[in-house]
Image (cartoon, rainbow, N blue to C red; front, side, top):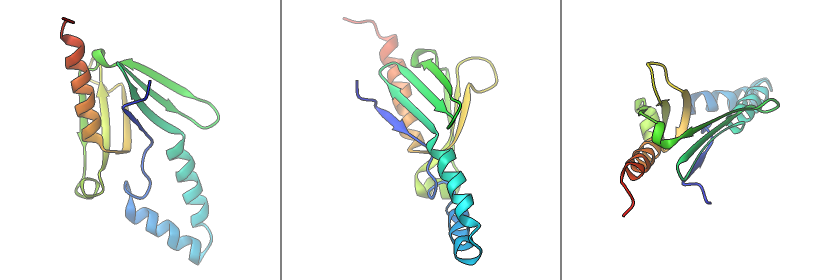
Length: 131
């Protein structure tokens, strides 16, 4: 099954000024390459996938942490975006299943409102009885 949403946190679009500063540090001192390499590995080692009625979150480069949630159990998806994040189309996503604390929080995810709408549509489709 092809996932409807499959993304990792964005680097440049999430923090454009920090990205530009890191590139400037490469030219000036060479230290920026370490910052960008760490940032890249951190961003690529996190992946959120929504496929069917399941949401999968995988984190970690060497040791892995995996979280699987049934979309029907999600109570709330909260999207937070600063002005610059709205311009670049990224944001912070918090997924709540029960209780007051989020199940997980992801910073810098592309198209966060599309993800929220997808989860809401999947939840509504699961509530309707098959005819």
